[in-house]
Image 1: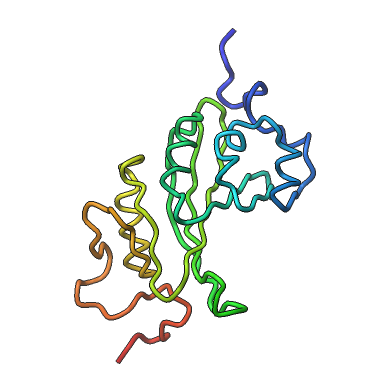
Image 2: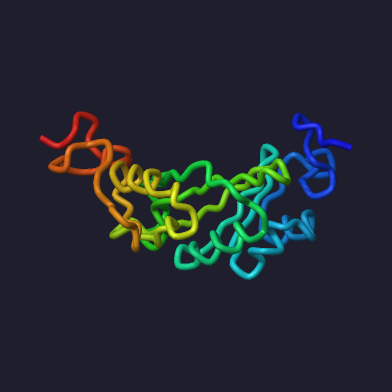
Length: 182
């Protein structure tokens, strides 16, 4: 019997009807999604988790992003859809991470999407590049570097991709002047 490409797989994918609209917190998500391949593969790396708007978001420490990318790929999530960032400026406390780097990843066989997020500090934001796991991250990481100023350690060619090389600042930071630096 052939699979219907328009209907989600019932054997291994998330069944939204089986879960409340939102679940917040690592422990609550672990209980609701016990045995889920993403949870199982990242269990030791997850620092926070949520299920909201029918999407699973798993938080990891920035220093573990390469391990998380390798583990989630081995678990069958085969397509890096996007890498982007969020600037949470101003933060509540100086010790709170300012930026969130978000990775949207798909599993074609499971017909589902997850998001992995890592929070990085604002003083000198940096995180490891995942281009060794997903070469497609190359241009996404360059865009985040260009617009937010987040450095990706180990990136093969981390240069500006949208703005001129002599551009001053990173325009998607919330503290960037509306009319640019003069």
